[in-house]
Image (cartoon, rainbow over all chains, first blue to last red; front, top):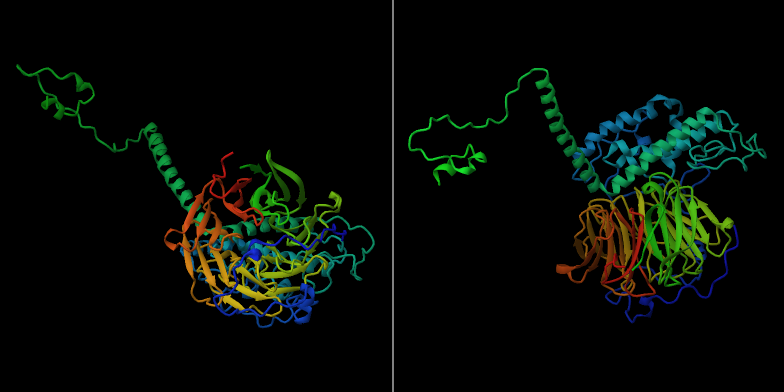
Length: 319
Length: 316
């Protein structure tokens, strides 16, 4: 690491609230333990014996986290890899998200299922199921994008899992792509190292390419990489939609309105084409034609505005 | 007041805690969905914004925070899961001076400890929060309890060991870095919580902003019932921030494209101002600690505004 520039004159100037006379917590006892006296956060964490808590061990399993629960929050659905190996969409439709758009989510669930199933059951089927599930199930990553009611969008997390899993496959199968290590492919992490964005290679004693520049990715890797990018795109899109469900609802509503208007438009167009083909459709509005009345002696001449209101006899008799 | 046009979509803006005219702006290409990012450092001059420097990154940037210990150090949260440290005094080729790759998914927020000033937090879509120092390339520890994306982690401005996190699992959790588990859990909203912040004058008071369009204020000692609720945004509330100068003043921005100022002590008339100067989702706000009433915002419309409270941001 480059040496950081030297400017440590006691840090920032006093904050406005530090200059204030306001006594923090003057309205009751503090629920927090008193601040530690150590000037160092690292020493504070080390003294408390919680250093590296949550870090992953060599198998990618978080330490001291066997009983993580989320009781205060909503009930989260099982992660896609915890459900089964038949696809990502399966567990999603059962998810009861506290959203006014539940119907919409359910509707899209089917889409999610269809979309995701090739990755679960197709190319990357049961043969990889165990390492895939194990590595990710135990990692601290818990995005669980399956939790979204917008099921079709969950594939971003699919991409993440898939990436790490791809790395596993490659390091195990061919062992010759150690230095590649970019993006989706875990590289030469060795057995069980499921780092989704792993950088394998240099430190790996099993890497036959150690010390040499990595070879170019083959077609299969390139394809997986492109697929990962594609899924990553939808993943981010899904999170953004998740953050802004109301705008998404608005967007869908606008789209439906557009389709509705398009229906009217095409209806008119179809009627025109049918007329050209000689099919007579019933006129939608019948214009009332004025009765043909013979002019009688003594009948006053039609007023000058009759050209504009030939059907409006009220204006005639009102004069 | 001036407006700056960024090349990419704005995501976060932060005033420097050392220089009253300096700002950092984190931006992402293509709305942060795909593409690269750029970290700007801008100086505010009588002639408008002057870029001091900018750093390009291979993935989008979602947040940034200034060091409280060194005026040249800046940290960015990247979409590739990395946390990047920049040193403005270092030559361009030396930046980033540190690239910390431990999160397995996008990093949503970073926040520097304002009390002890030697550490910072990062929160991520991988459901975890990590604690870092400048000196160590590895994180000191991870906080793994949330069951969904952690959109925000923010230090208590009065307590060196306490911080709060806001998550898509609909909870705000209060953590002590010395404790293995969170100390308080606030099931705050019916929908995802996108942001939270501490009151600078009351170390027990929190504000949270959610997809359910509401802003709620909490006393952490009573997590079952909010102190008050502020309604006015018409879409999800993306960021909330307490004023560093006035206890009851807070600022919010939303996917309804507006920036709002609130006084929570006037629940009947809490909305002080609604500013509609952005034409896309407003996602980044900040309030200067050095100049009272100096506000900043950025949005997906690729603009950064800085203005004095009470004035129109668009007024030249």
